[in-house]
Length: 323
Ligand code: WQD
Image 1 (cartoon, rainbow, N blue to C red):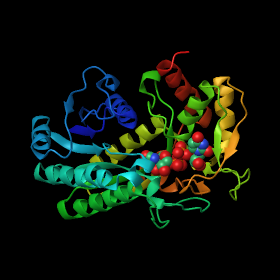
Image 2 (cartoon, rainbow, N blue to C red):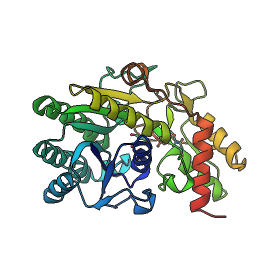
Image 3 (tube, rainbow, N blue to C red):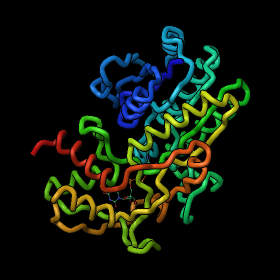
Image 4 (cartoon, rainbow, N blue to C red):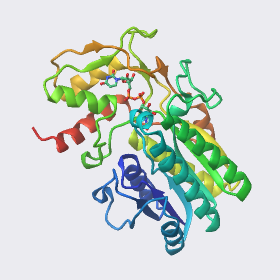
């Protein structure tokens, strides 16, 4: 049984590769290296460089590596970019998924773990978001992830493929400094960037209906996200009739102000104090996962807390930005 991990050379993908390998599952990585890097892969893991949009390439990789399961992580993932370039997102994420599933069906692959996102919910603003909370994405990125979930479920039913879509909440941290996220598009790296430049962390709005007025999110360590993939893969191997959609979070809300306080503490960069700017369009006051379903279905729970996420992310930032 070999698992093909698309996007395995990226931030989340490389953590999934390590977790699957440590769990004894043979893997092959498919990545176009547009944002990923071969340096992220452990020695001995085969890398096939190319895109999920290339059908001949997919057919060859699936055949040559005798792939029997796929973890599909390769995708574009920046919300703002998806608003500016929706067709790029529909091409990479929706057409990419369609091409991958077409090749997978032809090759007789019977298991799929799909990388989805809390972005499918849009602005849920409920206490805990369950998998039954209505999906109402508010940007093309979230739309393409929801379309991907629909495709996975429909293809699974029509062609006897076991599927699990994992809706990640706010992923942070790293298992090793060299595996840290190298972009600065989310709260933790954006605050590092400003603090190391001597600037005040910026809070996008403090007039939300939350305890301290700043947005509340469910931050989850990337190592926990990776272990959720292993648990999902095991379930698909054991039960060919699986069709799951699961939140991946800790079920605990942390505000922007609380997160910035941890970052300033961990980095030792206690000045300047945070400044408040205007709200960022499209942000919901609160997005915290209910994690009952994933616990019940996979026996999975997150193990790492916010401080470990920030400490490990900070080691990664320091490695890439030596003082
Ligand atoms: C978190 C909170 C900001 C930076 C996005 C996508 C989601 C998923 C994860 C993809 C918000 C606030 C941020 C800053 C701030 N993406 N903030 N100052 O928006 O919850 O989720 O990333 O794969 O789909 O929507 O994450 O990290 O951008 O922001 O105050 O300098 O931090 O307003 O409340 P978000 P984020």
